[in-house]
Image 1: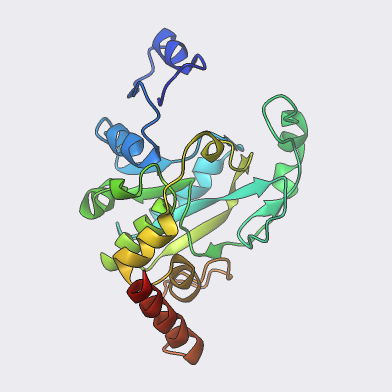
Image 2 (image 1 turned 135 degrees about the horizontal axis):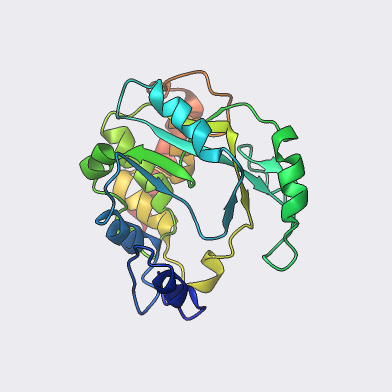
Length: 243
């Protein structure tokens, strides 16, 4: 719990819920890493606090986990969002912009009919990885605190560790109120940090490596050395030299 002045700290205490607490908002990277220290299960699930899970969201994730045969994977649920931002990985349907106007009953009546096939490029919450994989890559990189671009950085660390299965699960659904958390903090320049750390832009990684938003067809391979891809690498190299 970051800050907790909204009553959340007292709430978890009253219900005796295991939790970590920071008096100030330390950001998602540090907070989630601290929470992991208390985790005991084989699978680590992380989601944002502006998300509402639909029935059986975890069941469909578990079905994929049980047939993987490997600890190297990253699965994401599919978000339902009220506003179309051009994200090919989400379902667009408006059930409210905040807790006050959230039409929960309508969502529960209709969510099963909101269909989407599995997609490539899992890189954001709700996500699940094996705890051994989390340990192997060191969790979230706290140099990205409070958290901008920590998602693609985490995916890149998994890629470097040999993970090639980044799968969004179409049947696992959550409703996302869209950026209610990140409006509360001063953001880091994650785009530049990612570029300096990995030598390419996050957008290049997501497009040519993760193939984010494309239909899921299995494990990913190395990016093809096409002219557009090489041009993106050249631009990234030039940008690093100029900054």
